[in-house]
Each structure stands twice: as structure tokens, then as C-alpha cells.
Image 1 (cartoon, rainbow, N blue to C red):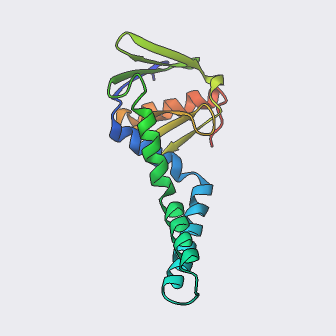
Image 2: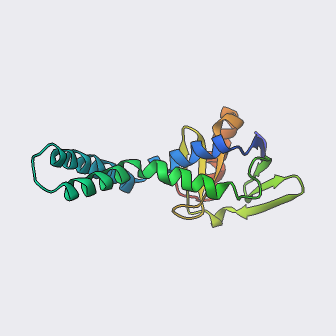
Length: 165
């Protein structure tokens, strides 16, 4: 197994969307917000059904409920808008995963980050999410790696003591 892994992939809008959806699916507060949103929609619907008098309260409950239910999708759209400003958006990336650091290049531009700059990682269906903080992450798609490369990335992360979230 090579010491350094080289992975190449296109940084497309669909790939960003896939990883943002995976990231927000792990957020427990969004799950609770969804449940409370459904409850508000049901209670608001009862108001329009005549179970209580105030249509204003019913409308506010419905609006609050829909916001709660759609929070994840709203966050994904907002995050995609911000991601479209990324200098590598839509370009091909070459990622080098080494025991000391991760390096990212696109054309003549690039950067590298030592592993101690990461607070944790997740391995989800779309691939690896490498977190700089609770909401900022870099991702490596599973589709761009072989099974051996994925195992090697886990070994490198464990050796660098990057915690699994």
C-alpha cells in the first residue's frame, strides 16, 4: 500500500449537495426541529379545521412547522450558494492524503493542511467528511477511491489521532 494516496475528482454542485445533505443528516437538532415542525403543522391544521378559534395562531403554527420541516433543505440550498463561491467550485481536484497532511491542488492553485487542523472525521455513504470545526468540512467522495484507499485513509486518520465523530 502506498504511503501517500492520490485521489482525483470533479468538485461539482451535485457532489457538494450530496455531502451537505449527509452532513446535515447527522445534526440531531435538525431531526428534533423536523419532529417539532410536524407537530406544529398538525396542531395548526386543527386550528383551520375548527378545533380552536384563532386562525392567526393556526397560521403561525403552520408557518413555524413548515420552517421546521424544511430546515435541512433550506440549509443545503444556503450552503450550496456559499459553496459556489469556492475557488475550486466546478474544477477538478487532486487530493494527496499523506501521514503528515492532506494536500489539495487544482491547476496551479492549492493548499495543504496538517492533520492537527482537523477536529474529527465521519465516514458516511458519500465518503469522508474531514471537519475543521462543527460546520466546516472538507470531503473526499467514496466513488473516487478504491476500497484499499478508503482503508488506508482510515489508517492515516487514526495514526494522526483525528477522532471519529
